[in-house]
Image 1 (cartoon, rainbow, N blue to C red):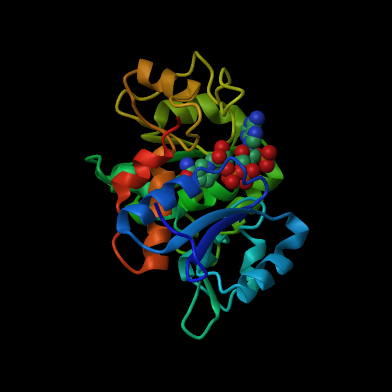
Image 2 (cartoon, rainbow, N blue to C red; image 1 turned 60 degrees about the horizontal axis):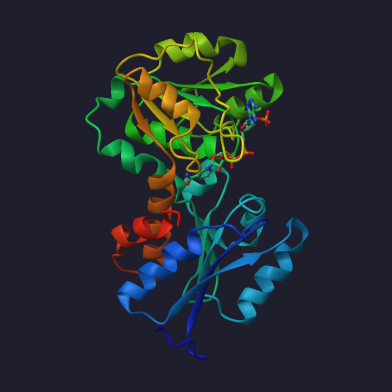
Length: 284
Ligand code: NAP
């Protein structure tokens, strides 16, 4: 068993809530496999306590940490360096300290999101994706679709003002002119035309497992990929509907594993055992 001593180096995740995060199990399993003297802990940090948390991490010389809701945007003002990718997304999920003790941040959600898609044979230049929702995860998904090569990205949401803001937010980036907004009443049409449908809304997440963002009558393309960022339950009702129509279904588990693996690789500066992390994040 791993002996925790004064020399044990610390990693962690900050968020609120963070009590049910699977990241500690995933990271500590990988650390144990590598035989390293590190420990990854969940740190519940309220929205108004971020400054104190970062100061505390400096005092105890924490190596790095993941960032989840509600700190993904707010953390940016504490960082000396932010990767261009994280700037484009407007959110940071991975932070570490450089040799000169400055905090640096990036976003590994894009790597996580595209990883399961890259193993599918597709000419991404021909793929028309639709993103359901325009929140934090949708931003990483939009950048991921652009990185894959999708020329145009449809986003559908229920609030016109937020939709307009989402589209406008890409004006200074590579995605300018490529993100098109649609109101929720266009859902059936988009579902029938899209090659990749990504649910970034929480509709269907446990405990609301009977809910789906799409209606029973909506028809997907038979060659479509349905991707739900939710991983509890798996499959969600949305993915069950898609599978019943012959579409390929992907849940959010692999995204979670791959974003975590990318973060751990940054902190440890070495290859990490992704299989061990995948196994450790499975429930029970
Ligand atoms: P968020 O910023 O709160 O965004 C949620 C989005 O869903 C918003 O656009 C919201 O629109 C929309 N929405 C919520 N309820 C809706 C409804 N009934 N009808 C239509 N739209 C609705 O959350 P997030 O951080 O992007 O996370 C979104 C989901 O992705 C969560 O389920 C999260 O667990 C999952 N996620 C998974 C991973 C992974 O690694 N697998 C990573 C990140 C996130 P309004 O603003 O109008 O409410």
